[in-house]
Image (cartoon, rainbow, N blue to C red; front, side):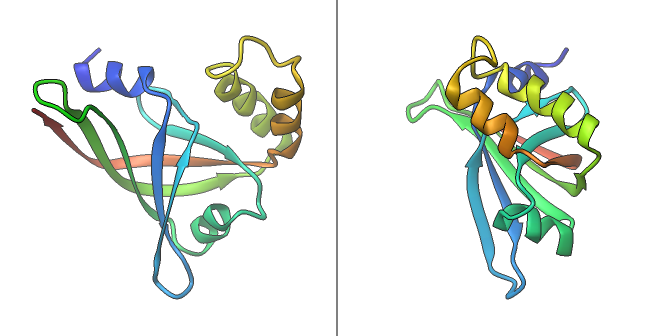
Length: 133
């Protein structure tokens, strides 16, 4: 596994950029899972990010750490996204995402987030840009 892929699997916050109907960027920090090939973000179809992806599949995202050299590392990803809506797939992927952030899915917050997740944004990367200072 490359340093980039290890970094993407270890980090916890991804900043997702979509484009709204007025062609204005919409950027939000999200929890995610990286499979080594694709990114997965659990959300609800009522959110702006999900609505934006439905209208325009082009997305960009950034995962980065550090504020002082030599510990600055980041990855910019450009790609296409789609919405996974099939309930069984959504719940299976959502559970994998949430288990990166919770020790179990039995707590109140985990249950609420899982119940609120009715779609998964799947990002297929087309281009990676890595920086390291």
